[in-house]
Image (cartoon, helix red, strand yellow):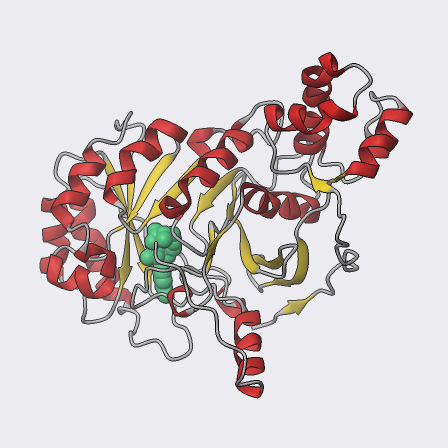
Length: 392
Ligand code: SAH
């Protein structure tokens, strides 16, 4: 398969100590508070913040000089105190099927990935990360093998969408259909362990004067942090996806170790409490197809029984391999027979088409190369201690 390597844009200058504060990532109130001390008339802070909000999140400008409804003097003052910079792009890859993956770097050198999945016709999803690495260690997921873990900030979450919009020329009100119509929190990390920043990012994403990707077009996927599931709904009104992968606790304990803390019955109870569920707003259950592990037809029947009464659709995900993975993907015929049983019980059960596999951009394959680079640097310098991941 062809991998198109495109040189990344010129690197942003290294941050100096007195670096300006970043505005992208702030909501209107945050913007108003940041700029108020620099205004001749601080009473105008809200009005100015509204203008800047539109420039940042609707027009996507990266330079204060483009903010033409703000007087030049004020633009210059703002430019000397604040930055509109995105996270730095470390690398950008385009797969043979059009999937794009960006490896991004934060100001202090932490790296995370974002994937754009162009769909057919009018849809395109951006798969964003909520953490660097992940603490959950699901046995089939590559991200879980990454040691370094930290929550991404609201600015870093939004920065992923902004970088993708820059690159896809997707700002403003495009004459053609938008490239990014949906955002899915299905990249690296567990979004419910970073709910404050995820919720803030969704508020800004959904704002009609800004990025304007509505809450029904935002899906948050969780491995099952049961106590925070209803709260996710109350705070964000986003669509819910659950990484289920097994119908029995003994198997799910192995595949998704978080199950030992929040077993299936408790998880389902919290899902039933998700506000606003209906046939028009279904929960997506993700089910990775692992050969000989969770793909029997008896398990398909057990799945249907388990979900009875929950407005649901089931996304069957062919397992995406990664180097050293201890699983194989189920045979196509088995996945189809499994889907058939679920379908006949009245649930939509699409089989997810693997995308971007040739650039390791498919589900569960995200794991930044930089961590490997750091690991080899550590081997060369044994005195340096590896960073250990914080607990959830
Ligand atoms: N922590 C969240 C967000 C990650 S979403 C969650 O668990 O839902 C990524 C989705 O891809 C999850 O459903 C995950 O279980 C699935 N996945 C992980 N590794 C995979 C792999 N190798 N092949 C296919 N799907 C995988």
